[in-house]
Length: 426
Image (cartoon, rainbow, N blue to C red; front, side, top):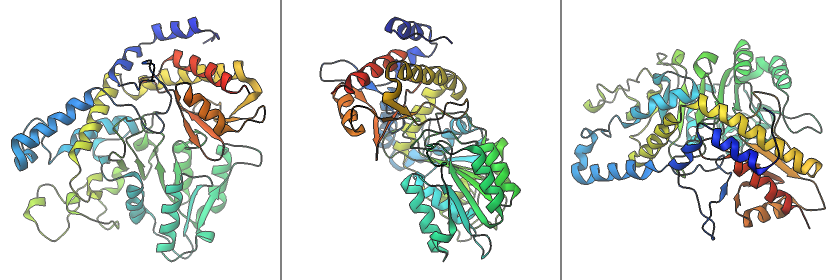
C-alpha cells in the first residue's frame, strides 16, 4: 500500500478498516480533558473488553446462587472451566485442544516445563537463551541450572546480536545450534523478543534443535495474540504465555501452556504433579497413585481461579468476534507498517527503530530509541505521556510502542508520531 502522511489519509484507512468497530468492544482510558488516551501499551497490559464485567458478574452470581454446587451447575460449571478456553488458546497458537491448558503464571509454567524437559547430563547440560532475555526467564533458567548442580557460567549459552546490531540474525541462531547442539539440553527462546520486538523463526529453530537432540520450548508472552503460530505443525516441545498483554485478561491473570501431543502418553516423563493433572474420570476417588491425563492438562496442579479464567474467556470471545488471529494479523501488519512509515517520514534520524523490517520478523511492537538534541529517552517518554500517550519504557533507553489491531486506529498512529515529534523539541 502507498501510504500518505496526513490525518485525512489515516482517517480514511480507519473508515475502510473491517475491524474498526472492535474498538467499541473495549474500555479506552480517558485523559483529564475527557478525550481518549492514545493507548499504545497492549504489549504490557491489554485494555479491558467490555464483556469482561458481564462474564465476571455471572460467576459471582453463580457463587451466590450455588456455592459449592457451582462446580457442576450452570452454563459454565467450574470443575471443567479451563476446557472452555481450550479452543480459543488452540486457535491462537496453532495447536489441538488437548495440547493447551490455562494454568498458573508464566514463569511458574516455565519452571514446570523445565522439570520435564531440562534433563541435563555431564555432556549435555546447556540451555540456550538470548543474552537480553526477559529477566524472569533468565532467573528461571539460571536457577534451574543451579538446582541440577551445574554452573550457569558454563551451562547458560547466550546468543547475542552482532557488534553494533540490535536484533539477533536468524542465521546466527542456527549456526550456534549447529556448533553447540551436542551439548545443549534445552533451547528456550522467545517467540517475540520483549525488548526489540523481533519475531524469531520458531519453525527453523525447532527443527535445528531437535535435529541435534535438543528439546525446544518458547516463551510466547509477546507472541500470543500478536502473531499467528503453528506450534503443533512446527513440532515444538512446549511453550508458555501470559494472558494479560495481547489477550487482555487483566493484570496477573492466569497463563497458558502448550505441550506437544507426542509427549502426552509418556508417563515416565518427569513432572511435578498435582491432583488437577490426575485422570479426570477417577480424580475424585482421591487415590494416591497418580494417573496423569493424556493431555497437557496432566501438568496442572490445582483447580484454577475461576474469576481469572472468566476474564480470559471474555477476551477469547472478543478475539473470535474479530475473526481470530489471522484477521488481526492482517490489520496488524498494515497498522505497524503505517506507524513505521510515519516515524521515518517525520523523524528520520532523530529516532532509531530497533525492530527488524523483514516480513515475518515483527508483530505489532516497534521499539524506539531517541538520538537527537542531547535528549535522553526517559525525558521524551515522560513528555509523550504528559501529552496523552501511554507507551512503555524499558531501561536503559527504549520506548516500546504497540498499535494493537483489536482497538488501536491509524489515527492513533498519526497523532502519536506528531506528539513524539513535538516532544523531541527542546
